Length: 379
Image (cartoon, rainbow, N blue to C red; front, side, top):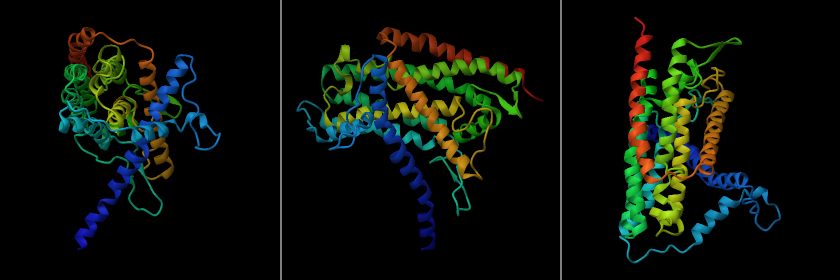
């Protein structure tokens, strides 16, 4: 009985983290990313955008901040229509297969260092599952999202969804390789697959793309770190571009290209099934932004090694959490800006970029990183 209660007590901390991160942070961020996209695109196109929905039955508009709740209510109240010609089991399964992998990958993202709560001896480590193979877990789970899109295209038993599903699968194969290769220089430099350890090293030594620490007010940076900036910057460009392709965002949104495929793989979907595809795309964008921030921009750490990891301070723990999500929000705004600024690639250009350019550049970049590390090898 005592062992049962000890196991039950051990579940409290991960449960708090899951509820706090997924339900109180990620899902609201998904909803308000849609709002931010609509407002930001309106600004770029000199329009107004959604600005009316606020507190019901009042004249308080709150700059339209109630719009995501109104959209969610609209999807819930819409008729859940299932066409007769679809393959029903897979048709119902596809939206869940798109949404769930995007949320699962946030389990290994460290959204802070530690959180030292009053009257609690041990600080909370701010990651749901601190796996020693965190990067491999992210790639393994994130790659499952394409199955939902392919199933949606095939199960819809319709021409345009099928073309969208085929496009998505070939796009995933093309860019998953360059995405994985772009991360290898990070692994070679930090010598760890644990995302928390990688961020801790960046906190102590400087970010991957800003390898500067301060000695008093004097900036400190080594020649090794300056030379490694070249392959790391190349990795960052390949990683971010491949991330756009992996999340089916413009200029790589060929699987749902409106001008060619109506709405692509989700043409035959309505109500909450369509909403799950929509939410899955934005959730993948948020988690992808968090992954990029963790690997290249220091994760939860402030620049130049300022602050602590929060192990002995509630204040610094909260600052680190705020720092992480500030970086993620900035990255999401970059996603939105690119979508409304760059035209869509042709499909042959998309494939050529992935196979002819990024794949080879990523391989050469690994050799360049190895050469620099060998040059400064100690002993």
